[in-house]
Length: 331
Image 1 (cartoon, rainbow, N blue to C red):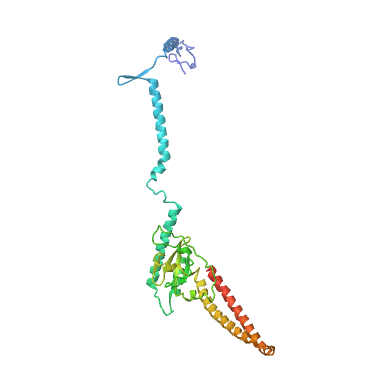
Image 2 (cartoon, helix red, strand yellow):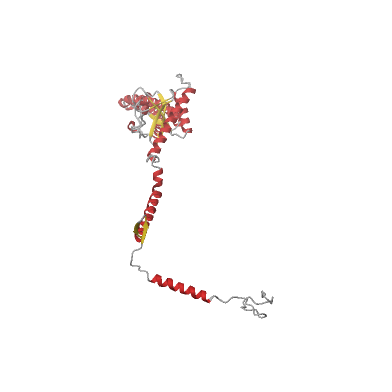
């Protein structure tokens, strides 16, 4: 820094030039500082003289309102706004979903929707199959073949099904518990389940199977609920339309159904053969028991042959009978 009078280099902190005595830096304005201190003390004195016991008023539209009341009201208004905002935020999901049915996502509603879809799918399969297949009454392509085809189509769509056999002209033994099957009315009970017969077949009650003259399909449209499909006509049958579609025997797959047909034919042959051999043996025993000891010796060889033959036929029949009743029990 240089003096603005003589040009001598001076220190910026110097108050006077060492060469010419020129004033370089003004002294602190003591008087100004003293005046500021006096003003500050005056303000403090005025502040202390204020009477805080008196109520301070605010003026709005020429009306004086105590300031503390304004503060309290403001606090309450802010608090009320916060509470209302919290409530609106908390209940907004319920408000947005108020138009939805409360049971829309309930398990019962979902099951009902799936059941209706399965019923529609069964009806569609039956109609489409009937339009592309022809029923033949000469055993070339009859109800047995058509029922097996429709069973396979249902399985491909993920619907459990069973092949049913029975007589639609007369009621038979039921394997659907109490006939509680799918009805047309959605309010009707439709909890049906496959029921195992409480008896075994023998020559005295085999006429029940002998009367069977038709085959169709039962589809499980919901757990335990079954719907009959008439494969030869291409339509579904509810139990309140024809209860006989829910009577008879059912089989879990075409293989078991074919095994049943084959086993039953063999069972009938062996049963009749065994019965005939038993009658023949009994006819031999009657005169043998009345014959003299010498005559019995002569007849004994024939009796033994008949006895062995009867035993063989009995074993063959009992084997087939056991297989048949096991198949009927487990379907």
